[in-house]
Image 1: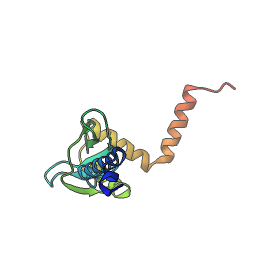
Image 2 (image 1 turned 30 degrees about the horizontal axis):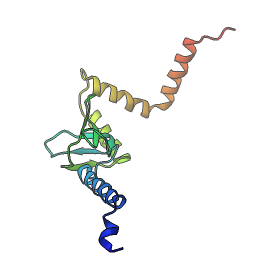
Image 3 (image 1 turned 60 degrees about the vertical axis):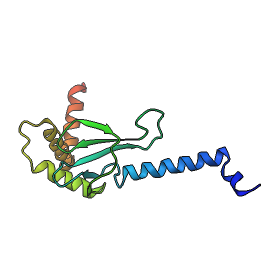
Image 4 (image 1 turned 180 degrees about the vertical axis):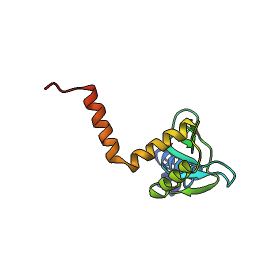
Length: 145
């Protein structure tokens, strides 16, 4: 059996096609990871990656990424190729950037920022939150003496 016959088997072709697809998707996704913060240019808003589905999927798009712009509640799914800059890696760096973003903007009439500030309050005061949960639980289910 010569070399050409071995590399042109259906199984080998399928393997190379799958590897080519994985490399293409990896280039399209770029450095984006779930929990990281990114933007296209310094003039564009920062967005958080919520999910990455590398596929392959039977319908278009064959891969997709789910994002939310900081300060908004709307979640979008798209398959736009990587272009831009990394603002903060997932983890403490992204959390610190997000907290600074939320706390540096007025949240008087913005539901998204008010909700995000509430989350920050819960993280900063876990004892108070636990006490409020316990109070709510006992108020719903009063114990009879």
